[in-house]
Length: 254
Image (cartoon, rainbow, N blue to C red):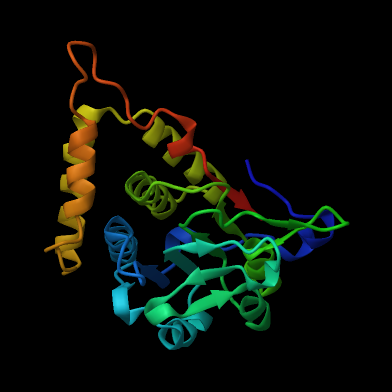
């Protein structure tokens, strides 16, 4: 399933590119230094395309602006800031207190087939009289992006990292974005706690192949996932991510 902000923009949002053949991606992770799972997520996503992510303090506004024009895929694993009073001030957080606002996005000319905002509330905004929603999504489409993956509520950084890893694996295998997102959601929904350790091992192996720093990237994620995988009392182990809060926040617009 995909969403259309308004019928008038349909002519501008045709996704014709073969994303499986894309060889460039800008992946930004944890510029605010408090989202370790998001840092691992961005590093992993970049590694699937043979690229190096902008992580932590390296993810400055200048560095992002320099790389944006040449990338058909953009991935931001960071904080999203929703401003209901002033929608044009809604923004994605970058390093050193910098941010990308909707106003700035509209002023850019993107050549992106797909933009993924892996953060909280990035699909929300102010509903206009024409029933369009003015927020980060509208800013991306107005700047030239053909499609965007955004969230409808606050997201858990660890479960989002697992979902996004599967989403990009599907894209690289040739799936269309809407189908890849659906399959990633089903994968996370049905992920049994007993399989969490093996998923972490896959993530670690990918990061090692990409020469990404591993000293602290996965410590928070591993501790939290292992804790949730433990049985409760003598009953069966619950599937921690079966609740829609974890697997259903992201939608495809475009």
